[in-house]
Length: 296
Ligand SMILES: O=C(O)CCC(=O)C(=O)O
Ligand SMILES: [Fe+2]
Image (cartoon, rainbow, N blue to C red; front, side, top):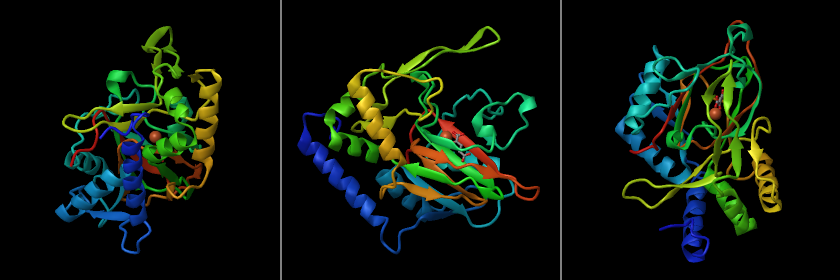
């Protein structure tokens, strides 16, 4: 089933129906918003099958550790392994094991990236600037400690964004599937190119072995450092996309992670609200990005 084919409306409609009926399940009283896992990151079989179902349905699942973890970093690695995530991204600022600790860092120490601040982060998928051979297809975001106030995450399944845009105007999908629609200029530090210019589509079919293609999305709402195609259709598509992201649809999921809770996802769109730390409550997150999708 290739629901990307703009000429095959019947297949697309079947897929839309299956997505909508999956979202219906979230309204049921016994829907499991937080799936139980062990404090070392081990996922019991029953929970793994719920995670599998939610990933299939929504591309993300939230979990909660049964008690407080001794070693959150190794628990995160453990979680990734059990959901088939193996190829960790080599991020510029990640520690050697390639999982990034996100916490407010003193700017003098050289980190001026927003993730290491307490500022809000707008809608994006992770690694939207990565070269195409290093696409970030999955992500584990884990909370070791929450802030005093704020730091809420919002999640949105790219499939629902695709559906919204295609239903508004199928030409929006064509515009945002253009491989040159979004360009990120090279990153040069001290005269050395640390990342070449990358141009990319926003919507990209991802071909997974023995499966029909699935949707991957590369996007950031940041205006800084992104050059969008300036034709009218692209600009209209972006207006529609931005409006949808900022709306409060049935598919937007807002949640503030507590210690020991996290998100496993196929790199869905997400945000973070601004937060304040206190001496007792300093926000610490771990972020693991992978080049492959979840496979359970
Ligand atoms: O801190 C967070 O809650 C999310 C951070 C994030 O999305 C990122 O660093 O890409
Ligand atoms: Fe992110």
